[in-house]
Length: 133
Image 1 (tube, rainbow, N blue to C red):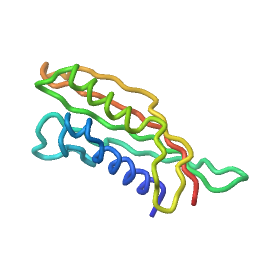
Image 2 (tube, rainbow, N blue to C red):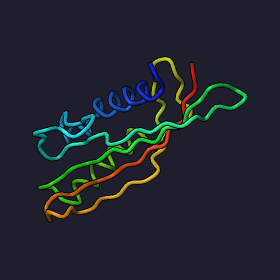
Image 3 (cartoon, one colour):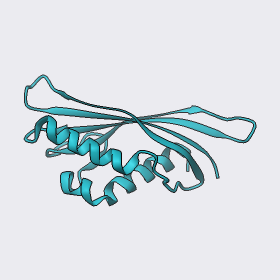
């Protein structure tokens, strides 16, 4: 399994296992936008990987972007969900299949109203560094 897929699997497992996040979104954590997804929900929008090898071994640097979608709860709900996700993922020691997670950090969060005037989009950007196990 590639490091990116192992990281994605670990991120989803951590998010779906968290009770405070589940209280906010239930099981609505998706890889890509659902066709008939209700609100609120979380989607993995992007996952990019770069070579981060050094003399110590093969490594990769990954950037993941999660989006939070909220309507009835507005900005407050989007920020609460982002806060719960940050508590789960920032500096987490996740176990990856076939790879070691060296570092995982939340680099940025934001919440913005969308052009329809009632939907809020939260954004979380993560940076992770992995090495072959």
